[in-house]
Every structure is written in structure tokens, then in C-alpha cells.
Image 1 (cartoon, rainbow, N blue to C red):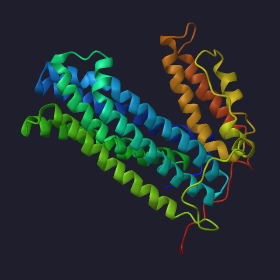
Image 2 (image 1 turned 90 degrees about the vertical axis):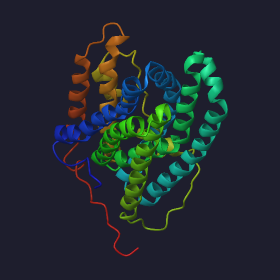
Image 3 (image 1 turned 90 degrees about the horizontal axis):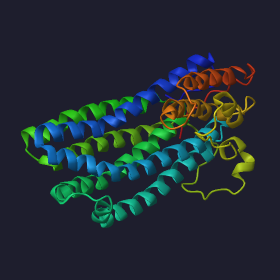
Length: 331
């Protein structure tokens, strides 16, 4: 269900929203871990090397998918919080159409340039054929990955981080079983590992997109929303917390001041869903910072979380309550 993140105890709201997002990160990694494990144990060393080698290239496609997730989530969360439901629905369909165009470009580039990319990363001839086979199947399944991530961004913007978590947990767990079935029972080799990922991601994508559509149809707008809209050059002026926030750098050292700078305490209530997600993203940066930033400590993670709670708690009671979403009953 759509959740209003501006009501309730701030720390409870923050943790309830962030924990499923942390879990989603873990289950997202299970796809590659399962593929590598099954390939290494049930097929052989070359198959394991082929899957691991292809992963270097699939990371490029994953980065694009995550970028679409964040971009869509930022815009939709602002409009949802501001109750601009007509513009919100247009933003969702615009994101879907733009993602489809981007997907077509990336799939075409991947199919035509897959061999070249494998040569660039100096793939050994012994595993080149298997790497190319795995990569080709993965690229054809990229639309599922992309639209699943866009749908996840929409869920997050609507204040719901649990639904996509359940989809991802179920699909990544099923991927392990299908991997074993295709490789051990059907003897499909590296192709079986790739097709298992293709099918499981496909199912989770279709379910996610379907549920997103139903959620949006249950929110009434004052008039019919256009299917597509070009970016408004005045967006930064109208929604300064979306386009005008300072982007955080891992090289900054004061976690508390960073969060205050990026998310002022007097931010409009429309930005609360994105603020909550932003706190989690900063916390994830703080966890990994000690590996490359001198002087950074894991304690900064807790500083970010505590500061996020203080910022949310700083909102006046009148700003922490908002009108419920008007459900559609007739249209």
C-alpha cells in the first residue's frame, strides 16, 4: 500500500522504510552469487570464470538501471508528496517511455558490441564462448532488470519499500532453484544459468509493473494525465529540494553537516519520502568509505542515521501530518 512517511515516530518510520531497502541490496547480489556458485560447483571452473568475467560488463547495465531507479524516484516522490497526482502519473509514464528508449539503445549496443567489450577486458579464449553466451542472454533480459528497477523507484516514491523487497526476495531465491534445475537436470550448462536469471527477473518485473499500475489507478487525479511530458526547465525553481540539493561526496568528512547541507530541516513535507531514502543511501556510503577514505570510520554510519532521525523529528507536528490519498471509486 502507499504509505505516508510524514506521520508517526520519525525513527520508526525511518527504520521501517530503510530495512527492506537494505534487504533488497542483499537479495540483488544473490543473482550473481547463485549463478557463480552453481556454475562453479555443477559445471566447472571455466563456467565459473565465464560468469564472473561477464559480470564486469553486466555492471554497466546495472548502473543504468539503478540510475533510472533513482531519477524516477526523486521526481515521483516530490509530486506524490505535493499531491500533484496528475503530474505524478505523467512522470511515471514518462519514466517508463524514456526507460524503454534507453533500454532499446543499450540492448542494441550490448548485442552488437558484446564481443568487443569482452575483448576490451581481455577475456581468455578458453572462456570467451561461454562468456559471450551468458552475456547475450543477460542483455536480452536487461529490459526486465531495467523496468523492475524503475518500478522499485516508484514504490519507494510512494513510501512502500516492502513490496519490491518481497518480489526480489522471492525471485532471487527461486533463481537458485531454477539454476540447479536447468544445470543439474536439463544439462544446459552456462546457458541454463543465464536463462534461470532471465526467467526469474522477468517474473518479478511483470509482477512489479502490474502492481505499480494498480496502485496508480487507485489514486485519483483532478483530470486525465498526459502519457508523456518533456522536462520542465523551471523544475529546479518549483521543486528546489529535488533538483537543487547538493550532491554528497565521499570526500566530505562531517557526516552530520553533510546531511544538514543536502537535506535542510525545513524541507517541504513533499520531500520526506526521498529524504528517508537519501539517509539510507548516505549511510551505505559511510559503511564503505573506510575502504578508501582516510580517517573515515563506520561510526559515521550511525551518525548519519541519528542525524536523519533528528531532521525528521524537527518537523512541526502540523507538517508531519498530511491529507490521505483520495482513492479512485468511479474512474
